[in-house]
Length: 124
Image 1 (cartoon, rainbow, N blue to C red):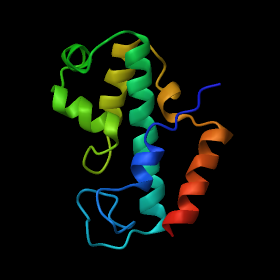
Image 2 (cartoon, rainbow, N blue to C red; image 1 turned 90 degrees about the horizontal axis):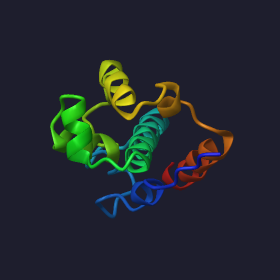
Image 3 (cartoon, one colour; image 1 turned 90 degrees about the vertical axis):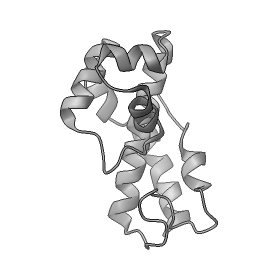
Image 4 (tube, rainbow, N blue to C red; image 1 turned 180 degrees about the vertical axis):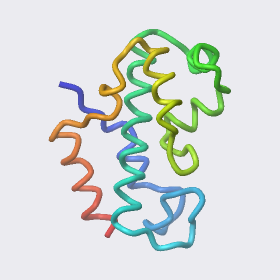
């Protein structure tokens, strides 16, 4: 079973004292429940990419080269801070570069979802 809590702590300890200032682009904006869920999903996907990349003993630069992205893009994707989400075509390229099925990146276990619900309680 794959559980990934890598970025949950990062989410809880956002870059600011304001718990609503989770998204880089909205530091003073109050986030809705839907915004928070999206951010958690982006971070979970990013954490899974980092997990599988590490499992394959690849550096961020190697993965970036393999999927024709910059290393900084891979860094932002893995941190869940890639603008307003990652295009499906990019996720497909990354999954292929990691030799995994796309579903591995976007399917979440009940245990992973429980982490989101716990974070949700603290954020809203």
